[in-house]
Every structure is written in structure tokens, then in C-alpha cells.
Image (tube, rainbow, N blue to C red):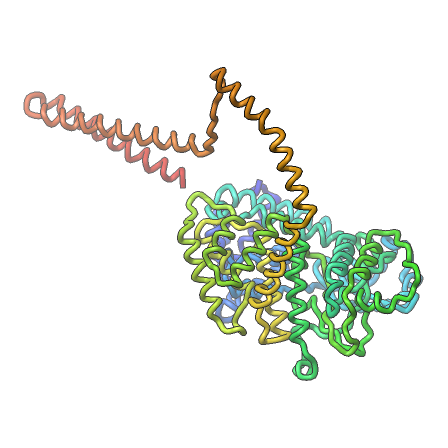
Amino acid sequence: MILAPRYLPRLAATVGLFTRYGLRDFAQQQGLIDIAPDEATVAEATNGDGQVSRAHAFRKRLVELGPAYVKLGQVLSTRPDLIPEPYIEELQHLQDDVGRVPFADIEQIIQEELGGRISKLFATFDHEPLATASLGQAHAATLRDGRPVVVKVQRPDIRALLADDMEFFRELAKFLASHTRAGHRVDMVGMVQQLERALADELDYRHEARNMALFRRSLAEFPHLLVPKVVEGYTSERVLTTERIRGIKVSEIPPISRLDRDLASIADELGKAYLKQIAIDGHFHADPHPGNIFLVLSGQDNPSTPSDIAANERRAEPRATVTPIAELEEEAQEEAAPPAPRDEPKLALIDFGMTARLSPPMRDRIVRLLFDLAENRGDDAGETLIEIGEPVADFDRTGFIRQVAQLVAQNHERAVAEMQAGRVLYEAIGIAYSRGLKMPAELTLLAKTLFSLDTITRALDPAYNPTEAIRSYTSEIINDRARRDLSPARLFRAFAQTQELVNALPHRLDLITQHMAANDFALRIDAPQMSTLLKGMQKIANRIFTGLVLTGLLIASGLLINQRPRLATTGFVLAAGIALWMVVSILVSDRRRQ
């Protein structure tokens, strides 16, 4: 129960988070103010002039409230249908930097998880962290064999802190979904489930370790992309050890590096790699912000890609693998493309705690959607979005398709430097919300990924055209799928299924004709909305009958007014009572329905 005493402090803090920082309208639309009216009277914290300043203050407040709220902010950053654009852009850069964990706690967790003291496990271990975050803290270290690594250690007692917050968010989402108009248009429960999945994945570093191995294999065909290897013997549920990357954040690339090196080719390779993750693998890195992608230059001490390892491997027989992560590394080296020249720059990807998966049907629809966006087929894109989403009762199909078609046409006419696939998808989701189409959480996470990817590819190459990349790559995917559908194996399977149908058809026809001959053939129509329709028709009939009675009573009273005035007056009083009852019942039923 959301109004239970133990939830009231969090409820006040959550409502105040929106009402104090320029999102009062959002809180009103979601029904938050109604359940915490005292917060509605609090003045907004301006922290400067304009919406951008309030968005910045909103982000800082999220960090102050703790890790669950930081993750909530990351989920909200995927929902342009809920909050204004300045807040979306601010939350895209949400850095969950918090206070440092004392080194004594870090040392204790490593000893508990890895079964040894730091001085025995590592040759060196920096006491000062490389980075701090709401869930963990990262330290640079060196293994006994001389390999430089990064050790990420989970904060102590973080699970208990998050469990109570998540229980509150679940109750709040259920309440909003049941009692507010926005709850019927937006998948509130799905948003919280997305948040829970993200936290569950990030709290188990073994899950992130497997993700890194999977993406290292998936991206092995792109020789300019580097995913560091996991040091499996130094990884557990609360400790993750990976090879160390030394590079430049994409957002901090100096101008001289752009002049000396061709970064356009690796921007194109990164775009194609993400399209492969989305359209072919159905498993994509959902957090590609500039802090997670580094430009790696030649001459720096960095790990090798699977292509480099495969090219330098001289063993006559491959080494036996004993763990799933080791098997994935072996597959990555077998599938690796030829290595890139040593003097060419690479891109390194880190932090695979937040990933997303797409089912095969969803994957096919998204491929069609991306292709429609790239080919300026707005009507088809609108129809595909309707297939992906879930229309609510008042969904305006015609208006939705018209607006999406206009959006796609406007984007197609923009200059190359202004094209942003992620922003177009965000705006399409906003149109869906306004027209009554509920979109799944996976699509908003995809929009966030493409939006961040637009920023990164533009940082590498300002002239990068995502539409052209989508057009060429999705065309290849569609052609490859068509060829696979016509492969001998699939044709044989289709023939076998057809043969089964043909063999069973005579018996099924015989059963149908037997039932018809015995007058035992029935046709059942299941109309889920029929009961609602019948109730509505019954209500209309009742109101018409009451109106006829009222009309007859008024006419009879008017005819009797001269001969029997007392009886006529009684008739008028009854008519007024019936009329008043009709008005009140109509108003009450309409308000209850709203």
C-alpha cells in the first residue's frame, strides 16, 4: 500500500523531486500531487534561470537521494514522452559520482570474495580509486604476471539499501497504473521492471563479465573495436577484474588527433557494430555514453583485440577451455576479422552492466522500422510502430500515422550534420504517447542507445550520416534474411510441414462433414468488447425509456392543468424529480468512468 506510514517519507521525497525542480506539470499528469498534496505547495528551486538550470539541479538531487534514484533517472532519460527535452539531455549525462568507499572496506570485500589479501593477489593496487559510482568503485591494479587491470568492487550493504527503495517504486508504479490517466498510456510497471532488471544485472558482476565476453565475441568481426577481457579468476559476484584500457574519452578528443587520423572509418564501424547488435544479435550495449567509449591510439599500452590475438597465435593445437567465458573467447578468436594495421586508432568499449535483449519478432519489427525511417517511408514507419506498441481505448490511428509521416519527412530533408536517428525515434515515442499508443520499454531503451550513439559518432566524425549507415546495413540484413529463407534447409522444412498438412487434410474434412450431417456444427465468435457494448446499449435504452415517460407525464399534466390543477401540479413535480434524477445519474456515471 503506497500510503503506508513507512513509505510516506520516500513518497514526499519523490513528489518533491519533481515539484521542486520544474516538473510540477509532470507530477500533476502522473497523479503524484494528489497522493502527496503538501509537496505541491512547496516553491520550486530555481538554482539559476531557465529550464536547463532546473534540469541540472534535478540531476544533482537524484544523486543525493541514492543509487535507486540514480537508476530511476537513467530510466527516465529514455522517456521523452514523460519529461521535457532539457531534462532528457541532462539525464543522458547523469554521472552517479558519490563519496568514496574507505579503502579498508574495499580490502575486506576483496578478501571475502577472492579468498586472499590484496598484497598476495596483486603486485600493485592503487588506494586512490579511478572512479566512484553509486553501486561500486574502480581501482587500478597490476596482476602478479604484470598485466595492468581495473578492479571494480561493489559498495558494502548496497543490496539492502536498494531492496527497500525498489519495493517502494513497485507500489508507486502499481498505484499510478491503476489510478491515473498517464498510467494507462505509459507502461509504469514496465519501467520499474526495467529498472529492477538493470539493478539486478549490475549487482551481480558475474553477469557483466559474461556480457563482456559475449560482446567481445559479437564484435570480433570489427577489428577497430576493443572490448577488454575479463580476468575470470579474479571475478566474483561483488568483484570484477578486467584488462585496463588507456585512452581518451570520445568527448575529450583533441583537435590535433582529428587532423592526424581518419576517425570517420571507425565512426562508421561503430555504427555498424551497434546495428549488428540490434538487428542480428538482438542483444545490445544499452549505455554507450562518452564516458564508456575511449579512443585508443597506437603506442599506448592496451590489450589486444581477438583479431590481434588470432593473428599472433602460433600454437599448433588450441588450448583446452574449461569455462563458458573461456569458450566465448576462443569463439571470438575463431570468428575474428583480419587485424587492423598497428598504427590505426581503435575504439574501446567498457561497462556492460546495462544491456538489453530483443525477441526475434521485436527484432524483425525494429529492422523494418529503421529501414522505413532511413527510406523516408513515414506511413510504413507509423504502421510498424503500431505493431510494436499497444493502443489504448482512445488511440487516434489516423492522426498518429500522419504525425509520424510528417516527422520522418522533416528529418529526411535535414542536412547530414543535423540527422539524428535517436532523436527521431524519441519524437515518435512522444507522438505515440500523445495519441494513445503505449510503447514497450525496449523501444525507449533503443531510442536512448541510438541517441547516445549519434552523439559519439558525431564526436568522431561531424559529417557522419546515420541514415545512410542504417539504409545500407538494414538492406544487407533484409537481403541476407531473404537468402536464408530460401536456403535448402528451410525449403525442406516448409515442404515437410506442408506434407503433414496435406496428409491430415482428408481426415479433418471428413470430421467436419460428419458434424454437419449430424446437425452438430457450431460457430463460436469471441468478441471481448461485446459485454461492454451491451451494457452501453442497455444504458441508452433505459435513458430513452425514462425520457419517453417524462415527456408523457409533462404532456398529460399540461392537458389537466385547467380541469384538475392539483393533479397536474403533482405530475409536474414528479416530472421535475425524474429530470433531476436523470441529470445526476448521468453526471455521476460519466465522472466515475473518467
